Length: 143
Image (cartoon, rainbow, N blue to C red; front, side, top):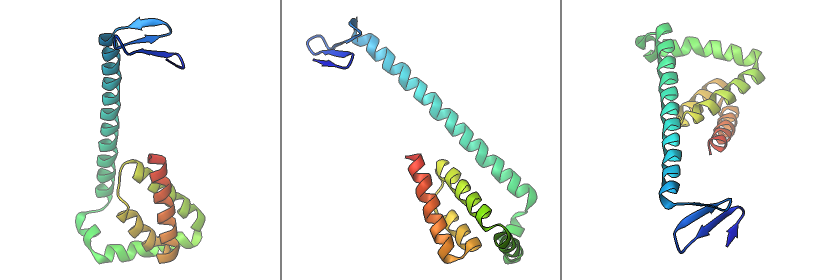
């Protein structure tokens, strides 16, 4: 039985590739090499993820203290900034939110912060539409 250029010999449990016999041991070695390569890729992605996370936390807390972030006055002052930014650049801010949300989802973030931020900046209806659209797009790309 031929499937494209791969022939499986059921009697000997061997594999013929381009009409050359490969033993099961050699085939298992090739599979192990592929598994080791995928493990290396996973480790590299994990290191990049942790680096980006720590870089974001460092940059955020180098500009703001924990007391500032936890107080309501901080949220109130930044609300005015975001409302002015929204009135001046609605389309640009929407695109930035969509791109950041896609990046957030690719880093396996969850959707609650995105929904809260979108509702805080754009209001409940436009914020909901932007959050759902960008979360769906990010999840589709991730899949």
